Length: 384
Image 1 (cartoon, one colour):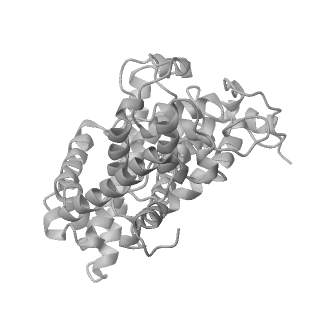
Image 2: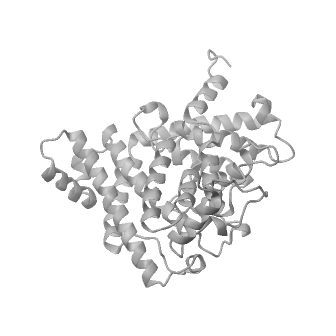
Image 3: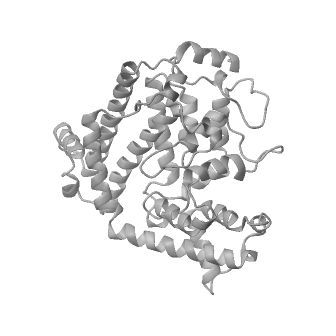
């Protein structure tokens, strides 16, 4: 049997000097006895996987509303893809794989139904009450909304996982940081690699889903250098295979190109910047986790293509407008007549927290649950 102490010693001996070790964690908000066989980050990962918010990701969508088709990615499948890429990067860079995986698994827990459009809608609905940002909401989920333990609210995760959640950053994510999380400092490298693992995952599964839905065509995407070069390679290597196989292999090659470049470039940056400790990581003013300049440029071309041809496709815009109608009418109805909320939600309203409690309730809905609630409230023939 391998004990927690032995696992922590393996980390000290095998991980890079700049990796975050479990034994050096700043701990939890509420003190707990350590587990005899799992490190603190392994426990965090397991608590996240067993949370209600994690299970609900199965029916929250990325770009496509859930009932559009069961072959499109959901928040759950996206999260698993991010975790897989994150683990690969962490292992190659000799970072703490358990910490990186826990952050990856938690990074979308605060997302609303109906993808990024849902987040924008909810932020607008409660802009006079603090607004809505999904990283802040993810932290609120793990710190407060999950209710499983007898002596505290939330999951009582370690400080480093919570820091990784709140400092998750991308084109869509720029949360305001609390003083508790050292806003002037960078997070761990384990947290930073999740940012680009997230980007690699959603760009490439959006290619796959976009082609499957026929919102984008092979002819269109052949204008993108990153796709074209890898697709030409596939055509050379497997000319007689079905089109579906060629498409999936091209996506696979693109992911491999991007992840390999990230690992190699991060390794170069660590060496060039003289990064030796976690302290060096957090205080470094330069970017450590990045693509090489060449790959950054061709990846930018892919992102511009997706924004123009997929995210602004008329069918996606229609879905966003539907989501706006559903979420706005739910929010207005609950706000004007909160007694229509389920008892377990209504009982939480006290003082001036009504709008935040309603936002928590709506944000926690799956696409399917939000649609069902809408029908129960507004369809006279639907059972309530």
